[in-house]
Image 1: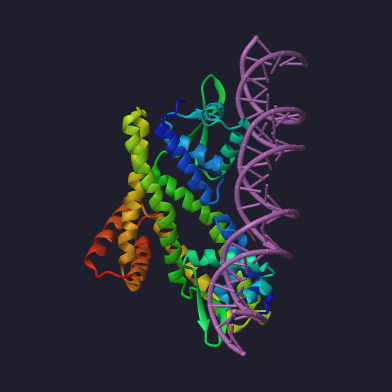
Image 2: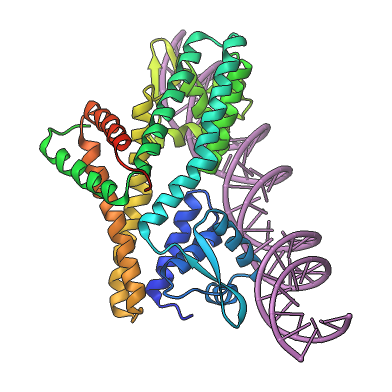
Length: 175
Length: 175
DNA sequence: CTGATATTTCTGCCTTTACAGAAATTAGGA
DNA sequence: TCCTAATTTCTGTAAAGGCAGAAATATCAG
């Protein structure tokens, strides 16, 4: 696959973003490439397009599949895997949020509950316990909100976003 | 400052979280400590509480101040800085979002606009251009929504969250 | 201005992470 | 079964990041 300068810039920038958000650069670059690629690509095509080692691409693709951002598919008469990224931007955002919640947010909430239980018995000062409890409560509040909003049909979500913005315009500022 | 086991667990976990989200471990640990500390702490107190090098603490505090998560204050008759974290959880969340938007999200949108402009002239395939444009549009949509919601008074935001959750409960699932 | 304390910047070591190439494994065709 | 292509796992090396201690700078009291 031939990369135009614009495509290169896109992939490079996406890679930097990824690095700032916890994934490594190659993973993010491969994701960027598949994100804009009109057709599924094989691992080898990705290799030569981005000048990455085959092994590296293999690992990255596995990670992307773990995040459910990329799927492998087969074509008749071809034994290679062909990889595609999620095509819909909304689905992409949803997936990232859902995955991060699952593997980072929920375990943190869980850990906080344990910490709080322990804090009852190890004479942690009361004000500290209170701060911890408040922290947990806010996280639980956000998670409850997320859980319910995520169940809504996509169209309702979009309508709510637009409505939210509209309401905001009519109210006095400062937030 | 004496750390109970619960406090240690809290700080350690917070540190790991931070590492997964792009800050380094020490920065996140210091933030966790200040987050639960009932009183402002000096750099030296932080040092010995967490067993970190003085220099390291200094750098981390500077970074935390850059993120506007921590403030330095002085006390009469004491020439040392005393550091406090944002005390309100909501403010904390707001600040993190606002800062990440400022230094990562907005620059990305900017870069995407440039990429799109370039894509017009360097014969990037039309489907690729379209994907890029869609990507930009979704990001702009979210940003617009954020900008307006963030202007709302805190109480209205909270009411909206609770309302959103309530509506969700009355609508059919899948989303 | 001098001395003492607080704080930041600089330097080098060490750990962690990323990656290319080699070896191993899996799957398909004859 | 054997051979070949595709893919993954293993291993050593290179690069990056984190951090302690040293040196430099700033701040204040006398």
